[in-house]
Image 1 (tube, rainbow, N blue to C red):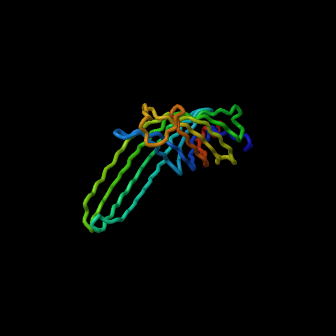
Image 2: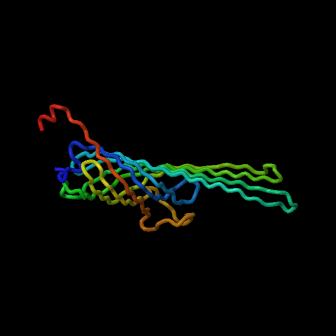
Image 3: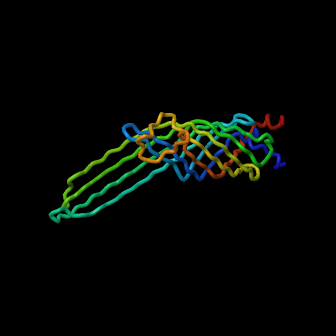
Length: 220
């Protein structure tokens, strides 16, 4: 009966998920004050059930922000001036998580899980400035930075099974940078509650059928 389908049944160990997502991270870049970065609006995951209650999953999400501005003016002698500036930020998050099934009745369509693991965030920015006076470039400069930070990640999750393969899922997460962060000179307001930042996922998860060998099927 479909009502008795196991979410982590022996024939469906693999799953994939697509989420709407929003996750924040406290980022530490050498030579700069600590700040915030994030990834949105999507996240994808692939996972495998290792047993009735434990699964291992990996995910991917990214964010790219561009800000370009041009300002015009004149010098004290009336010569026209212009200033072009651009700022780009890239962030990529790679979570590797263990999923623990918390619901005691595995046949229920509603399931509750706990998630814990590590998220690696790769961050990069690039800035450029071009200033002109009377059509001539008087200043041109570009610089950037990059960093890789790792985060403790944990949180609850809930899902509801439709039919045999598709689950609606919602997840919440807390992330904490494993580096020691000095917030004294932070350029942004960082969460002071033990250094955790919040995130969430809402989406669909699909459980794949795995074909068994003929001998194994006949044995069942």
